[in-house]
Image (cartoon, rainbow, N blue to C red):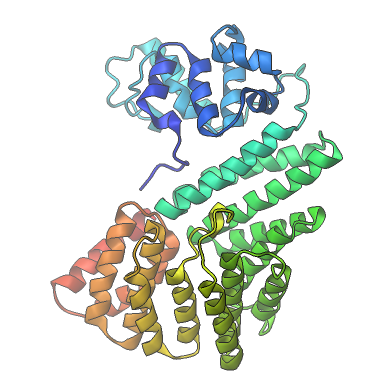
Amino acid sequence: MSDNEIDGIWKSPRFRKLLAEGQPGRALALVRKEMGLSQANFGALLHWDRTHAGRVERGEVGTIFDIRELVRAADALGVPRTALLPLLLATPDTGTIDNGACEGVDDVDRRQFGLAATMTAVAGVSIPPSRNAEPIRVGTGHITYIRILTERLWEHDHHRGGGAIFHYAAGQYASVRRLLDSRSYGDRIGAELVSATGWLSNTVAWLARDSNRPGTARRHLTESVLLAEQCGDNALLAAALGDLANLTASSPASFAEPVRLARRSTELVRGIPSARMNALKAAEEATAYAAVGDEQEFSRAMARVWREADRGLDSPDDPAWLEHVTEAELRAHEARGLGMLGHHSRAVQLYRESVGHESCFPRDEASYRAYYAAALAGLGDTTSAITEAHTALTLLEGPVNSPRLLAELRPVRAAATHTHGEDAEHLRHRFDTLARTA
């Protein structure tokens, strides 16, 4: 499995080397630049002025070596605290100390190991501000950071799924929520902060869902709805309601709930020119109608989907969370609805088309292959289902971490229980091994 954090430059040899050489300011500057933050933005995150931030990066300020100040700076940039170990050990190679073990660190003396143990302990606790510290005034730097963080979470999800980074993202959201609750900002910044926090909550909701935590996903989506209402962000409100409709279509609390949510989401985006956005909303509405057995309205909604797709799905103005909306994704939505309506053969055909689509993200390819395998199992084509499930498992064992998609393959695993042969036995072994670590 991947590390439980978003990818970042703090994993690079250059970052670790700078820390080992006693240059934490320059190391943090690498992170700042990767996140697209100016020195002024970076300073705003820590309540420093731009001059002080520059001096920190040039190594002219010794207080950055203070553990409390260093951890505060790392937290503000979203850098895992264990990534600071090279500074304490004076070596870029920390072995397995990052994981709390002692193997592979024979060259680290007892004093250094004590520092490492201290740092590892610090990584798991919250450092309270010093008694005399001024409360941080929220500024544009915080908004910039939250938006960039949200985009990078989506980028990670597209390529590697959400399973490995849910806890990291949830921790970042908790920090942002504390900023929001601090009320240390004016009206204009406050409105932007509410919107940025809502979008981050919406992202964490998806990562929770991909981690097979639907209850947590629903709580975050509910928070996104409330935050969107507070700041009047209709795009955020539409996104959250659409995700709720998609979530409830699997197990609706009431017969009409998915439809109500999806229709409201569609209404909210009618004035937004994005073909991707409108196609996705129509697809969510189609799925909602399928969930309640309304085949006529399902067909009408899908017709709108393909009218929007004909307008063109590529726009440089679309946000990162919409980048996965391709023809393959829309076919997968249609296939899901057809399966709900009992048209399994047509669903299998559409899933097959999605699997064959070029240039989709690894997470999406894993999705389509898992759905396709499960649909084949539903048709009773166990041999083909097992073959496709092996391909999906290769992605889930490799670049993509998605407990949700592993759960999608359970029907194939069940079918393999009653099937003889090496392929079936191998599938059972691969599935069970991955399930134990998911």
